[in-house]
Length: 325
Image 1 (spheres, rainbow, N blue to C red):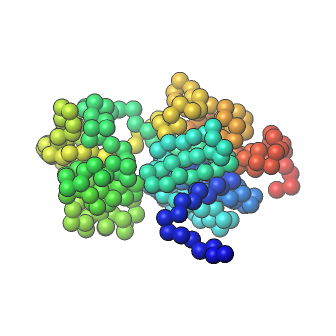
Image 2: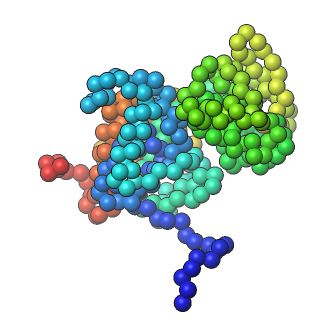
Image 3: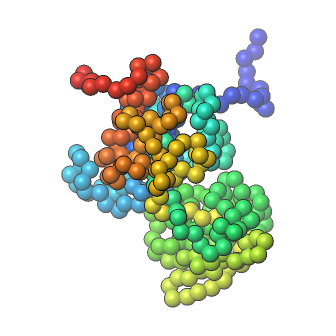
């Protein structure tokens, strides 16, 4: 009997022991410990420069690293260590989850991922301040996911606001559909890797606008233009859509769709092992209200949650002092 794979044949997504959403210090450190415990581990992350650590140009107080190090380099080291123990990393923005399902599920714009346990580590770069017209035109030309919505803008002009590798990746995705992409960088420089920036600047469909910020998104029933300011100028750019990848300082939990309880500040509520109200779902890092925003503390929380996940999956509830490690 043949066991050859048939093209077009449906197959179930792989179920991992642990799916980690977020690959910063908390998520990547958790992955080191789960992978080293022989738990199959997948980390879903938007990119090295999409989080607070990736935006840090220099870190000089991380234990064991006496010389200053760029935030992206530190995260890359932690991820490489996790990979050395067998953890897998995929680029993607999680759009929704089902935490009550068994196994638990997470969806990006292009794939479904399943895990027996899940660790939420998406940080606190969410935005509270919206541009004029943004909320009113959300879903009518305003989008936060090019992977999801790019096809709606075939042969049309669009804009992307941001400067991370996530923003650049999404702009490059849009070039497969849009006729022209205006890239609005609020800074003079980029946070993304140099090679990716070079690809952005060299693309014939992309116009880069440095030091440019959105003042207003214009349109009645849909996006018609954006009013931008920068470098002593103001102008109106006609676009059919605007994709926004800018950062703030509130926990990123919108994709959870209310499946986990949060505090008044929007932070996820956890117990002493970093487990949420949903059994098998843990949260660490800047999504927590009690968290002191330091990379070393985020890493420690990730480690604690990883040990708790290991015990949970092996039927050993609770944490205890372990002097053997």
